[in-house]
Amino acid sequence: MQHIDKIIKFHNLLKRRRTPISGKELDKQLGSSKSTRQRLTKELPDHLNAPLICNRSAGGYYYDRTDLRYPFELPGIWLTADELQALIACQHLLGNLAPGLLRNEIGQLRDHLQKLLDRSPGIKTQKLSRVKILSHAYRCRDGDLFLTLAQALFEQQRLLVHYHARSDDQTSARTISPQNLVLYKDNWYLDAYCHQLDEPRTFALDRIRSATASGEPALLLEPDTLQQHFAPPTASSPAPPKHTAILNFSAKAGRWVADETWHSRQESEWLTDGRYQLRIPFNRHEELLMDILKYGAEVEVVEPGFLRELVKAAAEKMLAMYRSNIRADRASLVNKLIKLPGIKVCLEATGIYHFDLAIALHDAGIPVMVVNPKASHNFAKALMKNSKTDAVDANTLAEYVERMDFVAWTRPSNQTLVLRGFARRIDALTSQKAAAKNHLHALSATEETPQALLRDAKLAISQLEKRIDTLADEAMALIDQHPELQRIFELLTGIKGIAQTSAIALMGELLLLP
Image 1 (cartoon, rainbow, N blue to C red):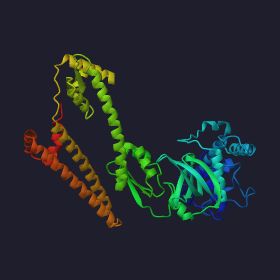
Image 2 (tube, one colour):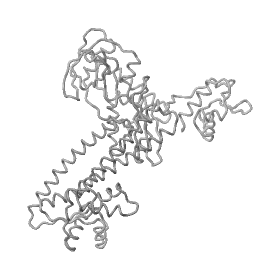
Image 3 (tube, rainbow, N blue to C red):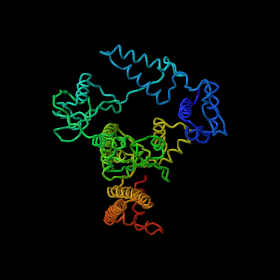
């Protein structure tokens, strides 16, 4: 039978009411269409023997109180979707328990849960093995330690704990007053007041090396203080948040994030360029930072500035790590090739990825030829090669360099490489300025925006403009120092529509083409 949730809700509405309920009001309460309501009004009397009456002149639907079946209750146990999920989760958790003192009692509880599930229409417990509940990033924990912490929590006693912090890899002794035990993302945490630091802290149970009850009464914090400090990122805190994160997700990532709840007071919208913007209030940034980094290049932090800088610093660390590995691999390849007599190397120009290897080969004295991708693509078509893999492409380039004249690649001058760096950084800052202006426009669209936010947005734009002007001046100083660059610059700016910024951008790319 379908629409179990709606049948239960329909039944409860009729059971509680003393007056009939109209079809329009019923659709609104059930969140259903007229056709769904009509199916429900047929199923209740036909399949469940409910004394349901539909009388338009009386005002709609109601249970017939003169019927011998009144008061009417649904037969068996009818579980809503939420109740069914909760029971299955309970059964899963109980099934994973190690045998203990309450083995018999827990076994009886599991049997009772199975009976509840069996009595629900359409549910067969022998098929519940098809429902999987998987733990993610589960960390091992000490059962005896858990019992000590739980006992101190319930008896409101202070604890002396030895805690090993992952942040600094140090172990310290602390006296704490336990406040809450929290199961969060498959791991247990202890919210407590730390008497050494004189502030609330959260301790991961798997990092507590030992715990002993001191016998002193615990210092209990007010509920509002607990909620303000320990509320998880998705909870509503009574205290006003200190910050609001503005995150712009790519259209691809937005299709996932749009269905997620990161915070109970989040706001969101689809931007005109197809990206998804999420605004999240927060006080502590640590976990939010990890969630942002999980999406990599699919998300941009617009505000606040300090969170943007933290993400930027993390990205630069990762890039530096991978660059160091690439540099080592490149040096290893050059060392192998240089030992081969008469070696010549042919590369296909692939954006920025071929460039550093071409320079390394050239500086090592290995003749290198850089082929335009269009030429290699047409050559492969002439050979009637339709498949495209790394091995096929490598063979195609080898055959290309054998049949065609070998044209040695000319290494760009150092000043050209520096100019390319200036041009690309100016382009990146220009994109940031455009995004900042769009954000200012959005803030200015409502009179409710505080003036402080408008001033901050304008300041960000002004700072970006100053940085762009500084880099442009540096680029022009470089061009003025080299006659050849100056000649090309004058040729480009002599074309109508090309000014200083465009000329720098064009020179930064065109002078490096093979």
